[in-house]
Image (cartoon, rainbow, N blue to C red):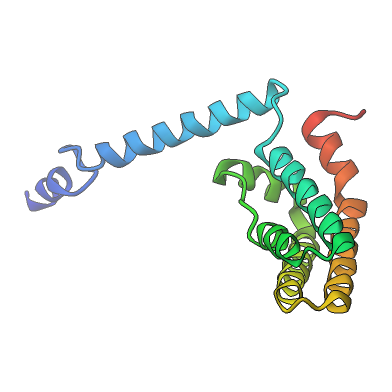
Length: 161
């Protein structure tokens, strides 16, 4: 019977053509579960370290603006605009938490990236006024996201404080 032979020879049939993908799926599930357990064990998210780095860069921008050190401002603003992303499994958990507010979350992120890019451009042109304006927009973007998401985020991932 050809039908039975097709099943045996078909990928995933009795011949086992799909063993590697199943193994990869199992390994991915284990990796995700391990990541979940680490976070559940109270370890901080990678995002926390990213946010701390962003805070340091914001302080560096403020310091550079106060001293008119536009090289420092441009470098810190570029770091803010191009900040690293959390690993994919953490990002998936964050996006699941954000849920229906994903549009708002992405709008805040886009606003801050755009402002940081404008800030870096203004600093490279050594335009104090444009840099100060862009820094104000950047701070407003950060503040808007923090006001909307920080407390529920911390409560969800680290427990109410």
